[in-house]
Image (cartoon, rainbow, N blue to C red; front, side):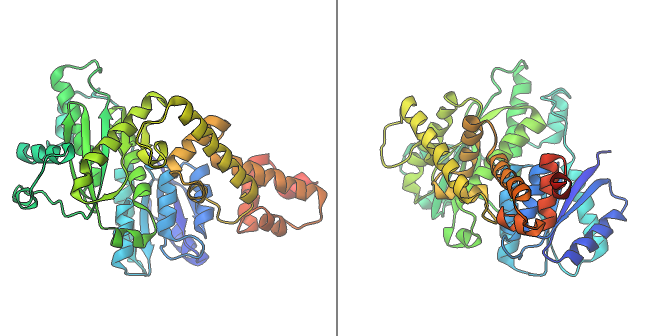
Length: 437
């Protein structure tokens, strides 16, 4: 049986310790229990540890539980999350579920119910084998129930995406919800046709892929997902931004997390590779053909970046120019993005609460694409670069000044001396006091 690492996050240390003791005495297959008293400290644990489950409060100073979930999912889309909160808010619960939370429990906890839910989450978090049909067609048939829209519904949606005039009443009569008012499109290009399987097994893979996509969408996402080509799945998403924006996580960031999760799960469960294109968000059905074309163009950029799999159209087509950028224009643009990000980090690395999202917002690019470009051009990921700057500066201060540990921690951007010491020892292999000696 697998063993798991659980991260508990609450700004009340006593609550962290209470939940930790409860889990430690539960008999559940938990190898390691880590606690954090802020979202920023928790993110460093997500970056450093192989965390399987995050149990977090919602309202915390500095970074809310919602923002923590968002940031953690950008780092590791597959991490499981679980909310424990004193706030019985429908809005919080709704956004938590959309960001992938497995449950939303209200304090004070019913211990039995809490442990039952943790047990359920850990069991579903068990990593399936990446078999790619190694278990045979029957195993895939057993795992997935065939699900797809009716042929007339698919034809109507294809017509909308291709610009054919459609009557709203006729669409509703077909059982299609197209109220919007905002729309976006995610397109998946599956890598199935060239796989060494028989035709029947390939069809099972296709339907298995559609089921995984739909399972990730079901619940909070208003969507229609269908095969728009032999190995192409199109997802039409609908948004009510007056509600969705209240939770401070933009639709683009939500779609990127969803797309990365789709990519991860398709590879993990079925062994299928894929490339995903994400459109912008526009108002009204009349823009669906444009959104469809944006998602298709975004996928095409995989030819220039075959080591990347999730593309947002707005990252690659910047500004009102309609012509596709040339390879040279993209190279110059990407260099500018990385140099601008590096300059911002060099100036702000000691800021408490600095995140990938903040850097991405400053230079008007998605976190997913910035993370990819930074690692490709700099040879390390963005947060490794932040930690390097913080650690080198902290060593300089330690060896050349009489500043105390808590003062150095404050100067290089850490919220607590204890967290600073953990990071310092992990980086240098010695504690601050040991290095100073």
